[in-house]
Image 1 (spheres, helix red, strand yellow):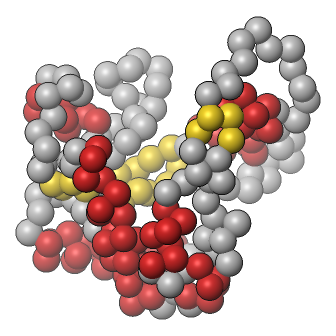
Image 2: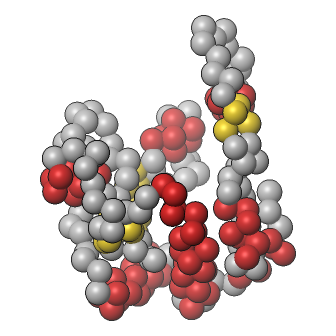
Length: 186
């Protein structure tokens, strides 16, 4: 498995070099911007260093990156509760761009989804992933309160309920256009 991961990362590095897009340096997993927190995205440190804030980021900045990342929910859900030490998911993993990361305006974001999904799908198939093994999932919409309560195993008394509705994930149409709906979406 480790050998396979290294081969995949080498192929991603080749894509990055051939893209002509600037490759960002790694940032620490622990965020210097928010002490005691982990970095939550691929580019927060670079944009803060470049612009001094997260408001004045220029539309059109483009980047490639391979970044060590950590997902706290894995520790909460698996490692902290498993007395036998048999964690089911990796809390520490490597995150990489394949189609590149580009700063775009909110209004034009949806026009990029299909190209990004196609690029990733083509890459995964090129390295040998059997497309029939892909299971596509998406968020079908719900209220914030219901989402949070579904994460809890025991119901809790809550002082604040947020009943704002969060819309269905708009990527369902994108998956369909890329031929992934025939695989079954849940």
